[in-house]
Amino acid sequence: MKHRCRSFFALLLAFILFTGTIVSGEAGTEILSDEPDASIATLQLNAGEGENTETAGKASPQFQVDAKAAVLIEAETGQVLYAFNENESLPIASITKIMTMLLVMEAVDSGKIKLSDSTTISAYATKMGGSQVYLKEGEVFTVEELLKAVAVHSANDASVALAEVVAGSEEAFVSMMNEKAQQLNMKNTKFLDCTGLTDEGHYSSAMDVAIMSRELLIKHPTIVHFTTIWHDTFRDGKFDLDNTNKLVKRYRGTTGLKTGFTNAAGFCLSASAEREGTKFISVILGSKSNDLRFSESARLLDFAFSNWESAKIEKKDQDAGSVKVKKGAVTNVNLKYADNATVVVKKGSKGKITENLEIPEMVNAPVKAGQPIGVLNIDLEGERLASIEVVAANDSPRCTFGLIFGMVVKQWTQIFAR
Image (cartoon, rainbow, N blue to C red; front, top):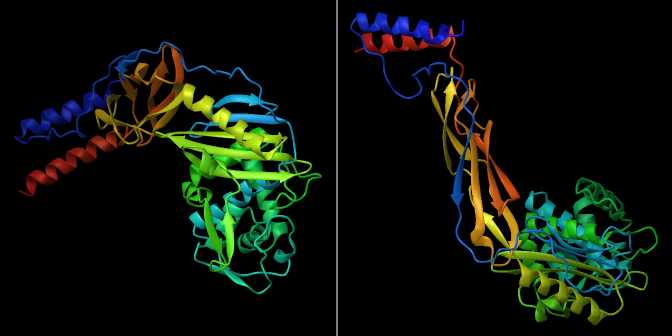
């Protein structure tokens, strides 16, 4: 039985040749003979040379952040570079609006709402205290105008108006906020409103804030158009909007993201910045002063940009070679890379990254397009940084009597049709 497919086809082939016909030799009709399974073959692909001998392990800055909690991550990968009390549940004030903006941007990018959509302001939205743009019941504004008021001016009334646009009410929107927090595995977060005005029972952690900040920036990058506005106006130029995040003006590469303050929360800031394609997010909770939250955030970002950089391995859908298929109707299946990868390395060590391709010399039929076949490992001096799956680019069904018979009939049909 082991050699039935090969032997039967050989007999049919001999018969066809005997009758003066020729079987096509195109790829996809040849049947591979049985061979023992081969071991994994590894191909070393050097991505370049570098002088820095330090590996991409974690590094902690030799300083203590002056705040109740802090965390620093690389945005593309989420890799944590510094953390202090990062999982402690604390009031976060208007940093809450990161989740508000995230849900608004999800609704925009999914087509549920448009930035150009208009909404009529409700009486409830006008009753918010704190930072606001003094909305009046019955006024009409676009989603874009309200989002700008939230991102730049941290307007509580505009936040509630957007919540009503997305979910119908703030209460329903808050349920969405908590559901999203669960989806993102934000374990130390509970939202009671969409503004951050509530202190008691409304909380998050530095790590959870970093998680939702990353989700907003990476999945919905157009938000940066709003979070980097330094000065603008509202209500046809009658009301000035000045960014509450002073790093937008003071720190090179700043992309956002959100400030927060109440007496209970202290001064908070989720700050993001990008330089030469490398993106970092720092979160400061419970700082003692307005100036201190900005200086401490800048210090964390300085540490990040001075010591780390990201390297993008662009591979998705590129050719990854081929693999032989045992007992397959197609003897060789093409391979491709399933995705790209981003890794974080010590600054100056990009050149020492190596790519190690691991694929078997042979696989058994059947093979389906998209089926995992091997892996491309991204390494730096013996440390595994990331892996990219290698998948089949096409099918190779298993050789069967029916398949062989169909192939022969097809050949005969083509011959007699001449």
